[in-house]
Length: 392
Image (tube, rainbow, N blue to C red; front, side, top):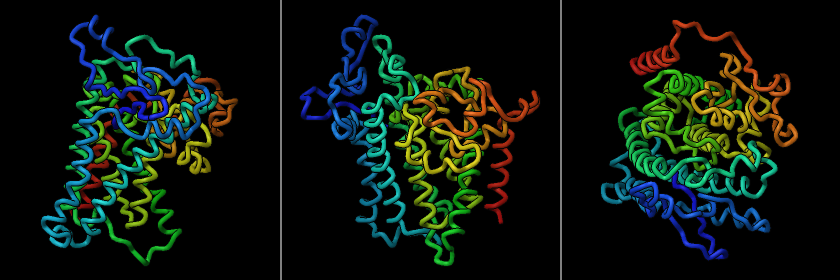
């Protein structure tokens, strides 16, 4: 995801992208890194409204990444213009146009909801999971704690993530007919609702063990997942700022495996994609309150979590071997990796039932996993189940 910069004409400030600042030495870095609102410091004007922040954060700061995003979004429509939509349609799947629309709408939702969540962060500091003083970071780091060298590497991974996700999304359409489903008119609301729950819990199960593996397996941590944890004070823009393979593997183990094993029909598929975007951006938003729409509507679920759980996970860096779940929070409680984190922030406003029953940072759940057990084993089991399902 592109890093936001201030584009509001009201404040008449120059726009910088990460690519515009190149440092060849520590001294050069110190002299060239700009102090940039929304990237390197917070706005000082206390009279700014939510709409002011929103308009300033809506567009990305990297011109190259934005151009690449537009090219990838336009490519499917260009293909339909050149070859005809019908020639690209796969029998048993939604039309190719529907896949292109999902890709486009998802990109728009990510950009707009990211701007919304960060506007909430800057407008309502009282709802932050970390105290305001925690974001007064050292010189030469952005608001999330990354230095210029790290940001330049993330800029490359942003490009690779966009390209690899494009290849995966459209590759699945042609390789797995029916993966992108049509609408099943025979399915009622309750049936769809139950299948969405099952699909999301299965998705969360796979991503739980993938995420836990990335912290426990030394190679996965050192070479891949630690890049995401350069952000000690996450904002929603940090959501997809990972090693490109981290995002690629999550897309396969999460959405892809879940859709194969517990397939959703067209409307449920759309809802699942958009809801998952909301949930992902919210848990990195730095705020934990009613403004987190996806987290708020799932609070009735057993062991539900809020963004402050994942925020605490980021604060812990390599020691953050807890709170791995993506949706729901069930697996953290079941396998003993849930921590309450800063559940007392906002005067306990966003604390869950489990938070209130826990003492401090103590993890709750089952006993620790035995030494012989690898968190990769459940992923192997899921992969086998997928191949068995596909072979039928």
